[in-house]
Image 1 (tube, helix red, strand yellow):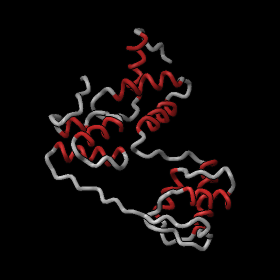
Image 2 (cartoon, rainbow, N blue to C red; image 1 turned 90 degrees about the vertical axis):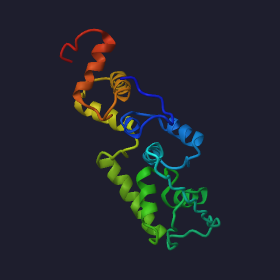
Image 3 (cartoon, one colour; image 1 turned 30 degrees about the vertical axis):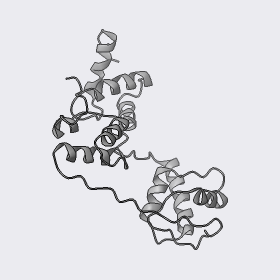
Image 4 (cartoon, one colour; image 1 turned 90 degrees about the horizontal axis):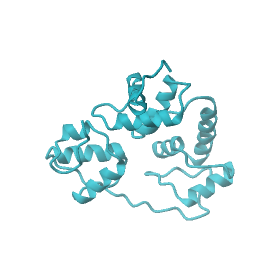
Length: 199
């Protein structure tokens, strides 16, 4: 089934059953007067509500006063809501080293630990960095491509990236779940026009 165009005449269940890029979701929201902020999951829910004729809540934007340079210390309490800034980056680089970066896991920790100190944050960063070296990190649900590619290689260790991408492109064009399934290898048969030969 060919993926339907994302427009106002689309029904919500059909919309939810197909894969759309974040850029397409943002474009639809902008054209429909809907808020364009948030991740892919939030945009999807917003559009689905709109297509169902339900009211869409306006996004409240909270302005955060940025702390002045030089005021952060290990005793400073983490503010809420936390917003990454160059001041924060400079502080952590000075304390942790030039290799510091706001990775996803650390950003989540900062945003969910308001009231703790920046000293606690430094300890959390080191712990997260060490855990990352010893175990596989999780991928957020909105990153469907990354999740799919990881699952593809877990199930097919001898395969190459071009085959994984070919299967992903086929999968995202289909209605329904976009999670990897061993049956997706049929996409390689269609692409090559010959049997899998047991690979």
